[in-house]
Image 1: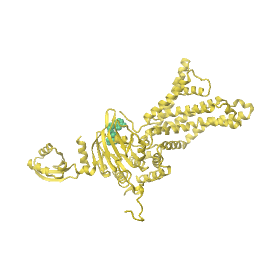
Image 2: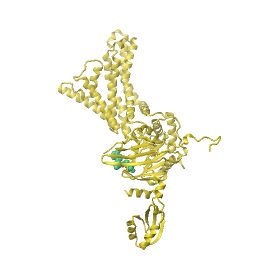
Image 3: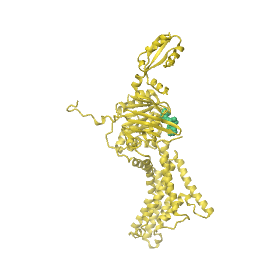
Image 4: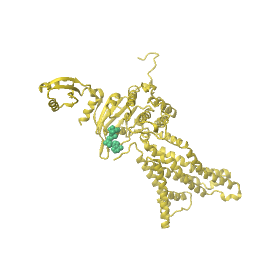
Length: 279
Length: 324
Ligand SMILES: Nc1ncnc2c1ncn2[C@@H]1O[C@H](COP(=O)(O)OP(=O)(O)OP(=O)(O)O)[C@@H](O)[C@H]1O
Ligand SMILES: [Mg+2]
């Protein structure tokens, strides 16, 4: 009769120390996403601009008459700007359900009953989105720089534009952190990943449209802070040593991005709890 | 009496933790204006302890405070000799929690879910996977272990919640209403499992329930809660034994008057079906029905029948909660 005849045994093996649980979580999250066909297709699209630009660099390096295709410092800025579209899609595809699905399944109380703090939980979830976003921004941009050196057969361009290394790192970091924290914060507010996706896209388009409308009406572009995307563009120009495109101090734009990231982390710290207190 | 050639006792059979598993000092938790826990001071000994109380008594709130999910407004808590406020992770490494509400990690089948929980608790991937299979068989989900949890029935969800709580072989288990929603057969099996864990696998556990038979079957100790406070606590046998006794009584004479006399003398009387009444005689006097005979003689009624009724936890519970 007793079902437990199958036995329950004491565990005598090793145990990893405290502070490792988030890695387990990140690994599982990454594996779940790369197992999806749709996602692989999205990644393929996200790397297409890299291929196009690599071809351009190859042609420029090998044919004199195509030297107009040779990369400049701005090329990398433009490239990362373009990748912004894929940042948007990957953020929605990967990020919308990250916490919302856990909320729907009441999984938070399970996670937090394991040796894992809420900060670790947030870090583990952020890391998933972070890794995928880095792989469509920082990674291809750096590969492009490497490709240039390879096709040109020299490090002349790289050493002449050494600022590109910190610029690419810093700007992709800003892109990735802004997208991942805001998305995660939205995801922690709902139980429906679909709703989160719609909210994220809605806010993205709404803020951009609002900024453009005010710019059209007033003829001034000092409302950059209304749009996270425009703020990011503004600080991108500064990071890449280009003249800023909008009439707003880049430090205000930078502050906007920092405030958004800070507010998102605050929301996350409030929302990721073992119990939700309803009063 | 270790003799030559005799295998030494397996280290894995050693008791896990002998001291009190939980100590609460003046613990108070407030939700808005409502004190869910009000100045709770209690010690939970090792072994199986039932946390008994009606809906809203604060059982789940207490368990969530032990886990560190809820920061108490007042007081302090120690679990397995560690302070919840300062070492929550060291505690959670050694405990298992079976929450009251349905919960799982989305998008996984049962084995990967349970193995994943093992890994989160620090087990290496291969050990976690092996133990996931074992505990799923143990809780009776062996056949269903490759199914997605979202397709599980309520009873199966209860079992898988137990599985994820024991996969890492915890020293202490918190079970919040583990038999909720289960059919009679499933409930019996769940209780068998809990009994087996506590009494044969040496897992210390705290079982929250509003069902007396569940606690009586699985636990040695009980803590009775009501309206955020501890109503009574102690070993179940002692609570049933020394605090008095219930007698079934039948008399010839004016029954209603005798009942009111009994009540005015401070006895608790339940007038049950037909002409049998149940009288609770508290304290040591309860060992002997003499007091009842004396009263009957004084009131000139004839005692037809007296029989000590088997004390149940129900009596203890009703009294503890009723006294408030
Ligand atoms: N998350 C919460 N937010 C606000 N109030 C809460 C919350 N959880 C519980 N409460 C309140 O705290 C009190 C104790 O609730 P608790 O869930 O601990 O009771 P319980 O003994 O577990 O009851 P049950 O047997 O119904 O599970 C109740 O009055 C409840 O309304
Ligand atoms: Mg409860």
